[in-house]
Image 1 (cartoon, helix red, strand yellow):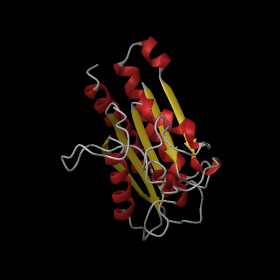
Image 2 (image 1 turned 45 degrees about the horizontal axis):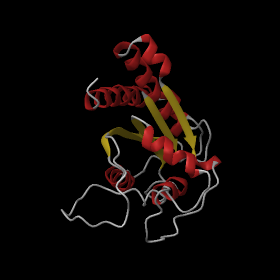
Image 3 (image 1 turned 45 degrees about the vertical axis):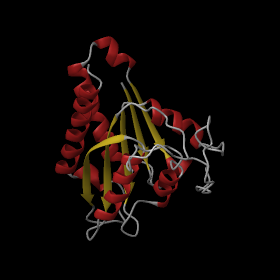
Image 4 (image 1 turned 90 degrees about the vertical axis):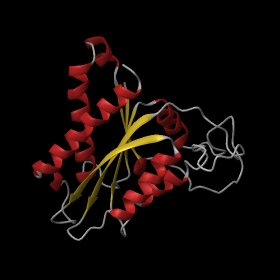
Length: 211
């Protein structure tokens, strides 16, 4: 079982990463109950901090980069491989101007070359069909007291649909002080929601893979 955690926060070890870690904790707890010791030992967890990567925004090339994922070789090249090979994907982002962070939006835009399902019932498409397996996905969103989550959720739902990831839930956390770091660590309901999401993602991933 491979889990990919993607943080779009510029703040290391802040509330976004605390909640991502709680999701990972729920995943690990569930895997320990559902898989053999050997399978648990082979499980992989990758945390990607987009803020630490060097990559350019989407250049809207308008043609397929196959056999590569993208024409541009930068720090996202390895992330593409992890995104394709994982069983579970968990996105995490603070809310900036009612949407996902700039780091997260840049990453999502750079996934434009993934070919989506055939929504229109046509056979033509400018990008190569990757033949991806269905993966289980979820997200954590962190905002201030008057934060708005719906627009960020819409962006992430679009990303999940485009990259053929089945979305199974969002953890929404409103910090009482957006200037303070890591307050999610003091919010038991948010931590429990994150842990529950992790367990749900394991159930969905194992069920869809027929294990």
